[in-house]
Structure formats: structure tokens, C-alpha cells
Length: 613
Image (tube, rainbow, N blue to C red; front, side, top):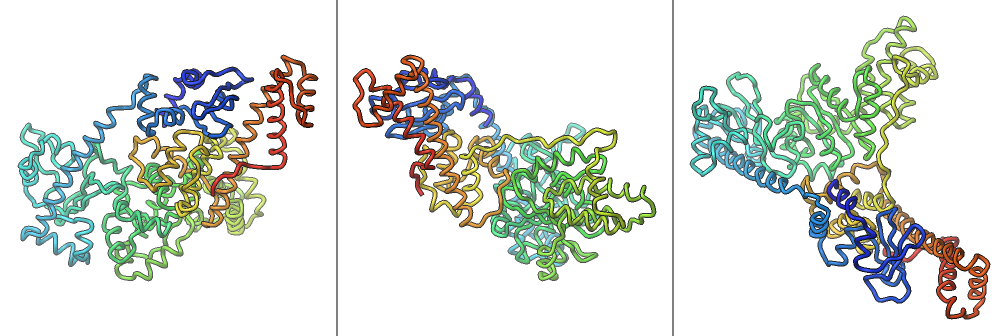
């Protein structure tokens, strides 16, 4: 998106369009004959302050710089962007293509390693691995095949020889995290030896790393690939590529800590589970999860360490921080959740059982635990309060100050009020006293920083966000005219949505725009309510176009009044309105005045152009 905006910033829209059709100043805007249909009276306007253009004549086309080039040159979005970028001197990061190619190459090496490890798992030398997986962990062959579990024999260069024998360069194998450089200048050797191998894929299903589980008490028990060009554990969630469909269907994602805590529930029929890998949830994880679900359940191990991990994960997800970081927590919470209604909960798993055991041994208990997961704010409040004994006002103030970040992070006033009520009862104080305390400035007398505002969405972007959130509207809204969307980025995104096309990767500006819109907050709506909201937004957009047209015409009337006098213009308009044909020299003024009057009346009557559906 930065590339698109930079191109539009560097190229003057009026100058560019002026190469195609002669434009004349008309108030703050410019007017000329439409280049897309034949006309004698100019109805084509360029609006520099909005960086847009629109024809109010028979073709009704409109858009921005990219839309103009696409329409004029009959180009696809990307081709138009490349053409404009070349003129503007903006580089469309050719290194991104090379980076993608490099990533695909490293992923291919990892995929070859997965094949090798799977083969070793099935061979006699994989007996220990099979015993661990099938007997101790209770996995079935289908699950092993789905997750492509393998075995790395306890040898130093077996994988290296396999990969180099297939033409892969040792340096690339090191870069992929599969080999380790010798500290003594010798040949690289296998990173994973004598370990059960669990391949790690990104959300697209491309292999990016490996996880190895030791069987003989090795430390660490689980060995992950190091950070590489294609693997960052802070950006990767294990099992997401397999869980995506189930997450979308359930609109709930369950987050656990380990590989087996994903595979066990998956085998038991609970396929909406993903895992972090030696880290709590990060903001990048949240960006991924928001694309699939609105409810996130943390199902961590129920021991003390697991509960601590749940707190850390939730803190990063909703912006909760230590009590001392209240102001920063508020900003983080808004930044992470401003675009989507995220419901965060903690599953009450039975004591002494990890998620894998619960799901396999008692599927009913697992389902109930997820369904009855406690809201995270409630969980954290109870966790922070614990068995606190309040014996003085000082103790009460200390408790409320500790809970302040959590209470401020709860944006729903009803939910916050419920928690305040519970806290007040436990402390034996009035609710008003708790509310007053959390509203006071933080230590040092400085007021809490205001929430960082995000750029508000235009009506067209709100409509797109609705459509993206509700793909079931595609049948009824896919035939909307492209001219409804001014921005070339918006128009291209709508075109891909209407055709149900898969969006591109991280460097695709259209995909980036989609992710930004999907991250924005919308009210929870049923399909019928979403359709009604979309139609209302279409009426708002088309009405705004009429107002835009009327403002442009009014500026022309003002110019005519300066040239001929307000009285003369009014007299011409009045006579024409009563049916008197204007003189030849007055015809242009008469047409402008009548058009201004008609547009004003249509706005007053709340008329909008008819747009499907």
C-alpha cells in the first residue's frame, strides 16, 4: 500500500489527466469533456483535494489515478501500478520477487527433508520413534500422515548426504536450519539427531522449520529450528494451515503451547487448535488469528507455569501489561483490537491434565472446557486478586491499582461495570469508590495517554470491510458497478472479492489493503443484517456522489455570478425554470443553474441513483 500511495503522491492527477482531455479550472476543481464517452457539454470533473475524478454524464465512471490508467489503457491493476511507478520513479521492490524465490527454494529443501524423515520413521531404524508416537502418545497412522511426523536417526551427516545427493547446496541447507556449521572448520552436520521430527509449516502450508522431540532425556526436550530467512517463531503458529478451515467454521481458535497439544485434539476431531512454539502469543500471531476467528481460547497447561503462560499470552493479545504499564497497555489494547471484536477466554482444563490428554481421553470434557472458557478479563482479575486479604484502605488501593490495566482494557461499559461490582464486593467498598480510583491519573500525576487514533475508513472502505467479513453476500453484491469505488485499490479488491479470487502474499498491496480492512472493528451482524447494512452504505456512497456533483456545479454558478452578476444569473435561471428558452449566449449559464437546482432538489428529496442490488 505504501507503494500505491507514493505513486499517487508523486504524480499530479490534474496534469496527468490533462494530457488526455483539456481541463479548465472550475472553482477548486477542474472540468472537461469526458475521455470515456462522446459529449458536447463537459461533465467530467477532477477533484484535486480528493485525488479523484468522476464523470457525471452518461458513462458515470470515476476513480483515482490508478483507476484512470486502468480504464484508459485497458490494463490490469498490477500492470497499471507498474506503469505509473516507472513514471514516478518509484521502485516496486524487485528484491521481493527474489526474496520470494529464495524462500520457495529453502522451503523445497525442508520439504525434501520431511520426505527423508518420514521414510526413516517407517523403516526399522524408526522403531523407537514409532513406539513413542503410537504407544506412548496414542497417535493413529492418519494423524501421523496428516502432520507428516518423521524420525531423524542418531547420525551426524545422514540428512546432509541425502540433500546434497539431490543437488541441494550445503550452504542453503544451513540457511534452512537443517545443518549446523562446524565450529572447527569441518563439514556441516545434521542439526536433528535421534529425535522424532514434527515439520512446521506456515499458514499457507509451506514448510519453514522443524521441531525435534528427544527420546532419551536430551536437553532441550524439544529442539526447534533456529530463526531463518523463512522461519520466525514469533510469526508462526503450528498447525494453522491445517486448522484454518475449522477455525473459520467454528469462528473460534484454541491456542495451546505444544505440538502434541495440537495433534491430540486434531485426532479427536477438534481441528481448530494451533500452538505457539516456546513463546507466548505475539502481535504478529494476533494479526494471523484475526484473519480466521473472533474468539480466541487459551487452553494452556493448568499448572502454575501454564497459567503464567496464559497470562502472558493474553497480555500480548489484548494489550494487558503489568500494573505499572497501564497507559501503554491501553494503547496496545486499542491497536490490537480496534479493528475486530476479539473475545479472549481461558479454558478451565482439569487439574493435572494437558490439552492433549483431555482431548484424547475425554472429548466431552474438552468440548465443555472450550465452550465454558472464562472471559480473559474475569480470569485475570481472579488471578490477580487471588486470596487477597484487605485489612486497610491502603490494601484496597493497592488491589485496585493492580487491577486498573485490566479494567481499563475492558471497553464494554456493562462488562467493566460487572467486574467493578464484583471487585467492590470482595473489597467491601462502594462501587463508586473503585470507579473513582481507576479513573485517577497514574503515578506521577500525569494523565493517561489518549488512545492512538487510526485513520477512519471511507464509506467505500466500510462497504468493502462488510463484504470481506461476510463472503456469503457475494451472490447478491458481486454485480455492483466498479464505478461505485473511487480508489483503484478498493476497486481491485472488490473485483477479486466478487470473483472469490485468492489474494496474493505479504507484498501484494491488494492483500495488504484487505488485511487492514479486515482488522477494523465492525458490529456483529447476521447475514441479513450485513446485507441491509451494505445496501445502506451503497445509498450513502451514491448520495455523497450527488452532493459532490452539486458542490461542483454550485462553484460554476458562483463563477457565472462573478462574470455576469448574481441578478442576471438568477433571472436567467428563473426564466428557464418557467419554460422560457434562453438566448444562445445564455444557454450555458441556464443549463448550469437548472442542473444546480435539480441536484439540490434530489438531495432534499433524498434521492439516490439506482445501484444494484
